[in-house]
Length: 139
Image 1 (spheres, one colour):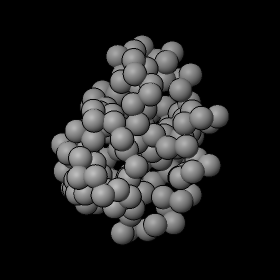
Image 2 (cartoon, helix red, strand yellow; image 1 turned 45 degrees about the vertical axis):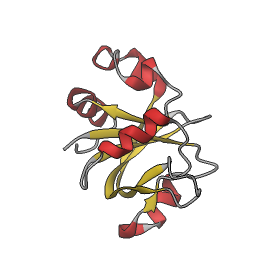
Image 3 (tube, rainbow, N blue to C red; image 1 turned 120 degrees about the horizontal axis):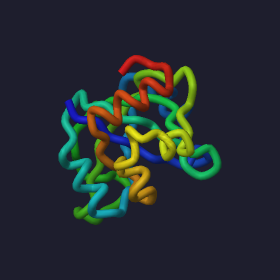
Image 4 (spheres, helix red, strand yellow; image 1 turned 90 degrees about the vertical axis):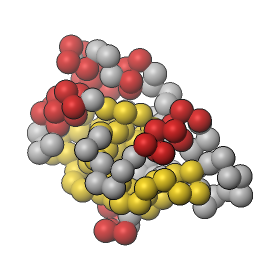
């Protein structure tokens, strides 16, 4: 299993919106960055990801799972853009803030710290465990 991080503006699509989609999940659409798209092409069913609220909150708030592999993004006719579907798995007991992530030495090399603008990004096994520990949730 691979791990990922999905960034979203909570006023556009937040954790509660994701949870409301239930088991069927929702397309992670609208991504118009080639690197982020390529990461989605690598994703497999069952891969897990962090759901990250950007903007004011700047924190990991939950865990999601890939429930449909890469397919054409339904929000465009441009065949260059693809997306995956994700479903909510569970909320974090305690959201993990970007400040916590930046000050934890285990997370110093995390893509979120090095390239905070990338909307879909990989997470290493060590980073996954560290953030789950900080958020007091099962990995």
